[in-house]
Length: 253
Image (cartoon, rainbow, N blue to C red; front, side, top):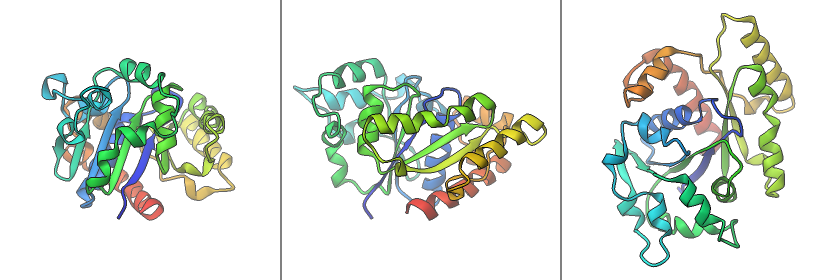
């Protein structure tokens, strides 16, 4: 199977992109898929949530871009869990600055990650920052699918259209958006319930794009701080993510 390339992205910050990236990547790995998670969020949260800091890696994504002595992809990847590898980054600004020099942002990621053709990953997943940057431009021109976490609160739901505008600016098809995950849902509050209904209304013409919501749980945050995933920390949250993973497999595999 050719690797499925997925961006986890939302142009609004604080919606749980890195948390979602880590849980989906590890969940797919637990389902016996071989996964590479590429951390291109400026906060390096995916790496931290998997228990890695800058002390744990020598080479990063930026080393693949060295014009004189580019690193091999295999030398930049670290094993994070069984079936799950991580490609960290330590300076998103340097990557952005380098990409600004490229005249072909639409193919640059293909060149940087050309070694992937000789690797046997089932999924290559990108944890992307919220800004409209050259890094995100390059990722969106490279991937096959977008999974978008949306916090179930009014500002986040209202901002859903931003990603469609972004894709339009890049002249990319909005059909890249395969799944939208309502995140941080709190069934105890009327506001959260109303915003979930609004999200369903927005996507009433394509309801299959929405997954079951992920509830707001302190243990999900605790897991990240401990460098663990929910599959290692909290059974209830793990069950919710497995429901989402079932949709990922149905929609994308």
